[in-house]
Image (tube, rainbow, N blue to C red; front, side, top):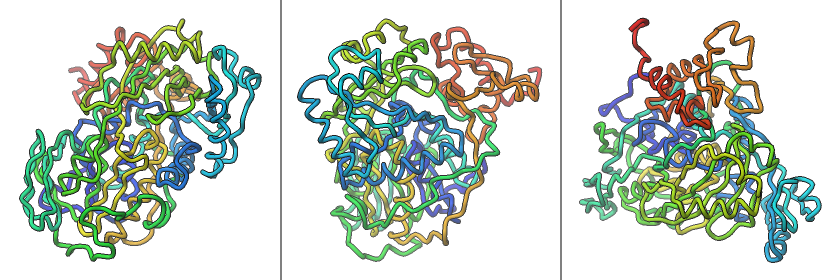
Amino acid sequence: MHVPYGPHVPYDVIVVGAGVVGTAIARELARHPLRIAVVEASDDVGEGTSKANTAILHTGFDAVPGSLEARLVQDGYRRLTAYAAACGIPVEPVGALLVAWDEDQLAALPGLLEKAKRNGYEEAALLDAAEVRAREPHLGPGALGALDVPGESIICPWTTPLAYVTQAVRAGVDLHLNCRVEAVEAVGQGRSAGSAVGAGSAESAGGTGRAGSAGGAGSAGGTGRAGGTGGAGSAGSEGGAVSAGGTGSAGSAASAGSAASAGSAGDTPGAAPPPAGDLHTLTTTRGPLRTRYLVNAAGLHADTVDRMLGHETFTVTPRRGQLIVFDKLARDLVRHILLPVPTALGKGVLVAPTVYGNVLLGPTAEDLDDKQATESTAEGLHRLREQGARILPALLDEEVTTVYAGLRAATEDDDYRIHARRGQRYVTVGGIRSTGLTASLAIAAHVTELLADCGLDLGGPPRDLPPVAMPNLGERFPRPYQRADLIAADPEYGTVVCHCERVTRGEIRDALTGTVPPVSVDGLRRRTRARGGRCQGFYCGPEVRRLLEDRGRPEGR
């Protein structure tokens, strides 16, 4: 990566948080002649909520009609489907069945069908019990019917933010990792004090600025173990594809739901932005950074950053989701994403295949106070197994590869919390829950429009970024070890290091020399699937670690 601008040269925009949403925003902004930086508290992109989810590309059929989330998920679904096809991100359109297990759930299905139609999704259809059984012969007894949603897909959640950030960095965006935001002296705010532990009182002109704690600000949220679904991501070999998607407009800044400047504390509709010379100053663990505009995409810590700017409009409550990953031998048991009828806490426990050939069971939905509580629990896993036994009984006879837990950024509102504050040249992107992966490109386009509405000169129409091609890590497509042409040209692609996931030395080498290389074995797993299989690195772990630690050393050392 090139040398960042540093503290003495201000950026046009700094994005706080390098999860799937933050990296998508950076990629979209990189299409304009701007100085952009992404600030991330952890040592890798997609290290938070983005790495521990159910990896579903949603149609938005069940979103709240008319909400900002509904609009952005629908737009994002189209954008990401095209972008994934162009970049080589694994996607499988397996479809979903929303299964009713009792009379109340069966009675709710017509309403869900109507909701899908109100959201513009016309492909959904009701199935009776016999049709459900024909579609899913291993389903447990007692299924009374289902809503068929053929457009739902499974996707690689780790390759996606890596593709975004690869394009962004190659286009000139600075990526500041291990860079935790500790305080913000905001535009027009005067002096703002912050602490890395707990909230600090603000000393601000005009009373706008209560400074908050870093508390992980700049991180997309601390999720736990990266799970054994294969840990896919960029393994290099990144040139040659045509990048499509993410190029259009998400609509006007004033449209849809709780978009810009709606009832935000301190906002004055139509107010002129501050003078261009007035800058935000971010105090970080790697020194000060200055910027004209600021975007808060800090995930679980978006409320913390928002308080640093003097706003207390929402609170993020971490909602833990525990999941069980079953061995690849279980893959033939399920053909669709099997969804329950949703509750107020979320979409409920599902059974779904993954693009890596495993089967997921989960997640739980536990509202917590601790934004670091990513451990799994015996009680949570027991509840999952109980529900899994009803949905797909034979699944419980299969071997478990691993378990993992992630935290979703739930708020008091059912909708996204995306607000533009023109007077501060600041955009909050909060409350982005499980649909954030799907909506990411649309959120990025929407935020770019909000920044322009706040006075950011985009310098004209967006340019096309140089194409990027991510390595295929999905089981339904040829992998490097299966490609005789690659092996003939470079025998390293025929040298398997991780036998569970069939990861080759060539893939690991490419990941370690990529545009945004990993610095940990977990980061390497998300780029190659190494150590993500049934032995969880028991056999290949030492060799994988050696390759990671030996990178950059001269040959023979």
